[in-house]
Image (cartoon, rainbow, N blue to C red; front, side, top):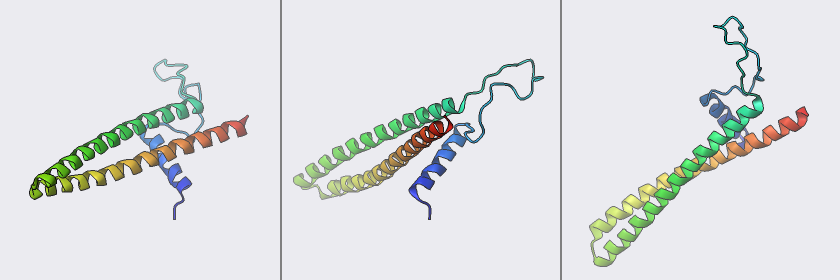
Length: 138
Protein backbone atom coordinates (compact mmCIF):
# COMPACT_ATOMS: atom_id res chain seq x y z
CA UNK A 1 0.00 0.00 0.00
CA UNK A 2 1.36 3.39 -0.98
CA UNK A 3 1.33 6.09 1.69
CA UNK A 4 0.40 9.67 0.83
CA UNK A 5 4.02 10.83 1.06
CA UNK A 6 5.13 8.03 -1.28
CA UNK A 7 2.32 8.94 -3.65
CA UNK A 8 3.39 12.56 -3.57
CA UNK A 9 6.98 11.51 -4.26
CA UNK A 10 5.85 9.45 -7.24
CA UNK A 11 3.78 12.36 -8.56
CA UNK A 12 6.71 14.73 -8.05
CA UNK A 13 9.06 12.41 -9.93
CA UNK A 14 6.55 12.08 -12.78
CA UNK A 15 6.12 15.85 -12.90
CA UNK A 16 9.89 16.33 -13.02
CA UNK A 17 10.18 13.80 -15.82
CA UNK A 18 7.37 15.43 -17.79
CA UNK A 19 8.97 18.84 -17.42
CA UNK A 20 12.39 17.53 -18.45
CA UNK A 21 14.05 18.15 -15.10
CA UNK A 22 16.60 15.79 -13.64
CA UNK A 23 16.48 16.34 -9.88
CA UNK A 24 18.44 13.24 -9.00
CA UNK A 25 21.67 14.39 -10.64
CA UNK A 26 23.29 17.64 -9.51
CA UNK A 27 23.64 20.23 -12.24
CA UNK A 28 26.99 21.34 -13.52
CA UNK A 29 27.95 24.66 -15.04
CA UNK A 30 30.44 23.15 -17.51
CA UNK A 31 29.53 21.35 -20.72
CA UNK A 32 30.29 17.63 -20.65
CA UNK A 33 31.65 17.62 -24.23
CA UNK A 34 33.72 20.77 -24.91
CA UNK A 35 34.11 19.88 -28.60
CA UNK A 36 30.43 20.27 -29.19
CA UNK A 37 30.18 22.94 -31.90
CA UNK A 38 32.09 25.49 -29.82
CA UNK A 39 29.33 25.92 -27.24
CA UNK A 40 31.54 26.20 -24.19
CA UNK A 41 30.20 27.42 -20.91
CA UNK A 42 26.56 26.51 -21.39
CA UNK A 43 25.06 26.99 -17.97
CA UNK A 44 22.69 24.32 -16.75
CA UNK A 45 20.24 25.31 -14.08
CA UNK A 46 21.12 24.48 -10.50
CA UNK A 47 19.00 22.09 -8.49
CA UNK A 48 17.53 25.00 -6.56
CA UNK A 49 16.53 26.75 -9.81
CA UNK A 50 15.04 23.52 -11.16
CA UNK A 51 12.97 23.05 -8.00
CA UNK A 52 11.79 26.64 -8.14
CA UNK A 53 10.77 26.28 -11.79
CA UNK A 54 9.03 22.97 -11.11
CA UNK A 55 7.15 24.44 -8.16
CA UNK A 56 6.13 27.45 -10.24
CA UNK A 57 4.85 25.27 -13.10
CA UNK A 58 2.95 23.03 -10.71
CA UNK A 59 1.33 26.07 -9.07
CA UNK A 60 0.29 27.37 -12.50
CA UNK A 61 -1.30 24.01 -13.29
CA UNK A 62 -3.02 23.93 -9.90
CA UNK A 63 -4.44 27.41 -10.53
CA UNK A 64 -5.76 26.28 -13.93
CA UNK A 65 -7.40 23.26 -12.34
CA UNK A 66 -8.84 25.44 -9.59
CA UNK A 67 -10.38 27.87 -12.11
CA UNK A 68 -11.82 24.94 -14.06
CA UNK A 69 -13.39 23.61 -10.87
CA UNK A 70 -14.91 26.98 -10.05
CA UNK A 71 -16.29 27.29 -13.57
CA UNK A 72 -17.86 23.83 -13.32
CA UNK A 73 -19.36 24.63 -9.90
CA UNK A 74 -20.85 27.81 -11.34
CA UNK A 75 -22.33 25.80 -14.24
CA UNK A 76 -23.72 23.27 -11.76
CA UNK A 77 -25.45 26.05 -9.84
CA UNK A 78 -26.97 27.42 -13.04
CA UNK A 79 -28.28 24.01 -14.08
CA UNK A 80 -29.62 23.33 -10.60
CA UNK A 81 -31.52 26.64 -10.66
CA UNK A 82 -32.93 25.71 -14.09
CA UNK A 83 -33.89 22.29 -12.71
CA UNK A 84 -35.76 23.88 -9.81
CA UNK A 85 -37.48 26.34 -12.16
CA UNK A 86 -38.53 23.54 -14.53
CA UNK A 87 -39.83 21.47 -11.62
CA UNK A 88 -41.89 24.37 -10.24
CA UNK A 89 -43.45 24.97 -13.67
CA UNK A 90 -44.36 21.27 -13.93
CA UNK A 91 -41.91 20.37 -16.71
CA UNK A 92 -40.68 17.07 -15.23
CA UNK A 93 -38.89 15.95 -18.38
CA UNK A 94 -36.77 19.10 -18.59
CA UNK A 95 -36.17 19.00 -14.81
CA UNK A 96 -34.94 15.41 -15.14
CA UNK A 97 -32.61 16.45 -17.96
CA UNK A 98 -31.13 19.27 -15.86
CA UNK A 99 -30.83 16.99 -12.81
CA UNK A 100 -28.90 14.37 -14.81
CA UNK A 101 -26.60 17.07 -16.18
CA UNK A 102 -26.00 18.35 -12.62
CA UNK A 103 -25.10 14.84 -11.50
CA UNK A 104 -22.55 14.47 -14.31
CA UNK A 105 -21.00 17.86 -13.60
CA UNK A 106 -20.72 17.03 -9.91
CA UNK A 107 -18.83 13.84 -10.77
CA UNK A 108 -16.41 15.87 -12.89
CA UNK A 109 -16.04 18.49 -10.14
CA UNK A 110 -15.13 15.72 -7.69
CA UNK A 111 -12.34 14.49 -9.98
CA UNK A 112 -11.12 18.05 -10.56
CA UNK A 113 -10.98 18.73 -6.82
CA UNK A 114 -9.11 15.47 -6.19
CA UNK A 115 -6.60 16.45 -8.87
CA UNK A 116 -6.18 19.88 -7.32
CA UNK A 117 -5.53 18.32 -3.90
CA UNK A 118 -3.02 15.86 -5.37
CA UNK A 119 -1.12 18.70 -7.03
CA UNK A 120 -1.15 20.64 -3.77
CA UNK A 121 0.33 17.61 -2.00
CA UNK A 122 3.08 17.37 -4.60
CA UNK A 123 3.87 21.08 -4.24
CA UNK A 124 4.00 20.79 -0.45
CA UNK A 125 6.12 17.65 -0.67
CA UNK A 126 8.60 19.37 -2.98
CA UNK A 127 8.76 22.45 -0.78
CA UNK A 128 9.36 20.45 2.40
CA UNK A 129 11.97 18.17 0.88
CA UNK A 130 13.74 21.05 -0.86
CA UNK A 131 13.92 22.94 2.43
CA UNK A 132 15.15 19.86 4.24
CA UNK A 133 17.73 19.16 1.54
CA UNK A 134 19.10 22.71 1.54
CA UNK A 135 19.31 22.91 5.34
CA UNK A 136 21.03 19.52 5.59
CA UNK A 137 23.45 20.50 2.83
CA UNK A 138 24.41 23.79 4.54
